Length: 180
Image (cartoon, rainbow, N blue to C red; front, side):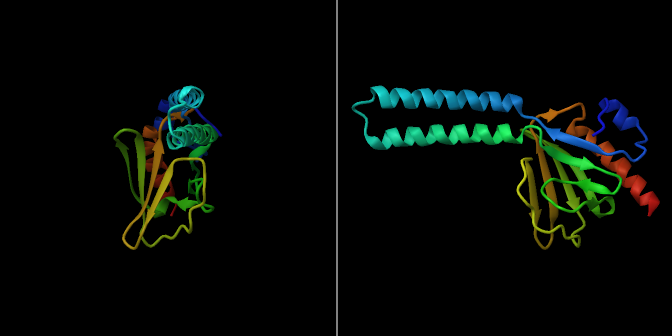
């Protein structure tokens, strides 16, 4: 994994190096942990001092606490997982076993709503197979007309940001098409 300053990557000729972008999420984990702690304390107070409350509300508060605690654990497990890897051969996503060749990517764009998302549209005839479970936030939409992948980045762990991917993908794509 070779990481440099973002401006070096954008203006760099690449020499066909491998670039991996890793998922972060420390700030989200902190806020989720605060919510989980709040519900755990509320559950403790309800069980300890809620003599007049029915069992249904006690069980629901326990289930809410378990839900938020499990979400914190899932996010903790995701931190440090690879969102995507760019190689000279193509784009490598952790949810697929095979590499997506650069020639199969028809369009790509960055969407900035609540979170930064990289949307990649593949050639409709290209078949990736079934996606497998991975820690990264990657959605794969596939039907007869569409072949889209959407990668959501909450925080990027490392120096390369997801917004730099547009220039990086275009350079890799240009180099691979020139070779063909």
